[in-house]
Length: 147
Image (cartoon, rainbow, N blue to C red; front, side):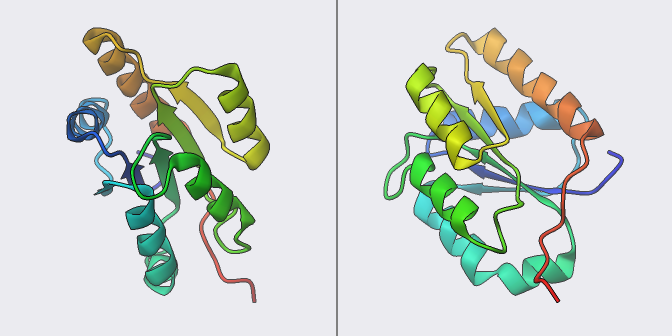
């Protein structure tokens, strides 16, 4: 991968999280991947580890499911995009929902991409591998505290 990034996956379905990680690896992604089981976990991580994340200097990318316990993906997206320090972080919605109203809402709130997870296993694997290939060539912003 041309640039180092840290990938955060917020996904409550362990099977989906495992498939995502495994197929990103198969696509050649060797970057660090952290998995969070609900929206609250990923928000706690981002807001309590901000200084460490800035010191690491790695751009972050969040792969975010919508339907999760404790705090859903829409609320996570809203909080990230309202935060003056985190708002540049790319957030890719990766969810089974393909409702056009929900897709529009996510883009209005500031998501970078919206990917519907196919129900069919082979199609799901194919989509994640394509995502991995995309991640190998994309450049992402670093999170920095403004001077």
